[in-house]
Length: 318
View 1 (tube, rainbow, N blue to C red):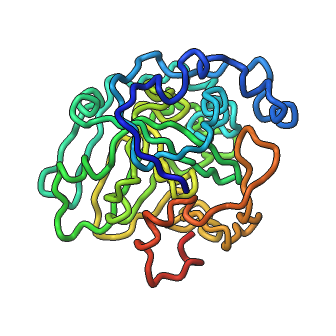
View 2: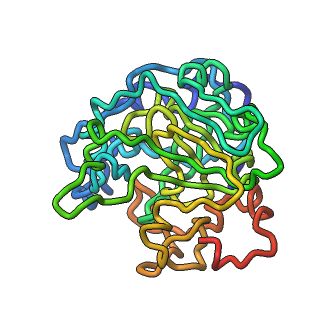
C-alpha cells in the first residue's frame, strides 16, 4: 500500500470537478464494452445532490492509486433495500428521503445520545479519505470518501468497561425501500440489515463514518446520508443508511452471518488465502480494468490493522 501525506486540499484538488462529472466516461471505456451487461449504456446514475463539502483535508491513509470513476461508483451498487441487481439502487433510490435523519447511539455507554445528520456534519471534521474498497464479488474500487473516524463519535458517548462490540442498524422503511417489501417468495433478508465490529476495530482510525464521496454529499444508492466504511473488510461490512449504533457486551449477529452462516462469519477480513465456499478470493478485478490483480491481505492495510488479530486463526477471520 502506498501512503502519502499532503497539505490541506479542497474537494476539487483530488479530481477535476468537470472531469469526474462527465457521464459515460466509464461506460465508454474498453472495459465497459466487455462488461456492458453490468453498466448498461445510457444508464443515468443518480449522483449526489450537488451539495459540496469545502476545505476538505486529505487523510494520511489515502492511496496514490487511480480513482474509480464517479459513474461506476454510483451505478454499480449492492444495496438490497433497493433491489437485487447492481443497477436497481440508483434507479429506485432517487426519491429516498434523507432529511430529517437521526442516529441513536446507545447501549454500553455513559452518555447515550440521538444526533441529527446536520449536527453530525457541523460537529465532526470532514476529511477526504481515498480507500480501495473491496467488494464481495471480487470487484474492487478506489473511492474518495468524505467522512470522519467512527472513533470520534464513539468517544462522545463514553463506552463503559463492558463495551466489547458495536452493532449498526440500517433504516427499515418499506414505503421508501422496495426491497424490504414482502414479495412472492417472502423477504430477501431479515430486515433490518445489521452489521457489527469489535470495539477495537471500530476505534481504529481507518474505520470511517462517511457522509459523502467525490467532494459531495453521499448519493442515495451509496448509503446516504451516512454509512460505515471499513476498508480492510469485504464490502458487505460497510453498512449503509445507518439509524442506530449500539455498544454491546456480546458479539452481535450480522445479517449475512444469520442468512448463511456456512459462507459468512463475523469478521469478513480480506484474506486471499481463504476462499469463499463458492469462489476463490485470491485475485480481484478492479472496476474499470480488464485483468485481475492479486488480492492483498487486509486489502492492503495490513500495516494498520493486522495487529488487531494477533494470535487468531486467519481462517476464522471471515
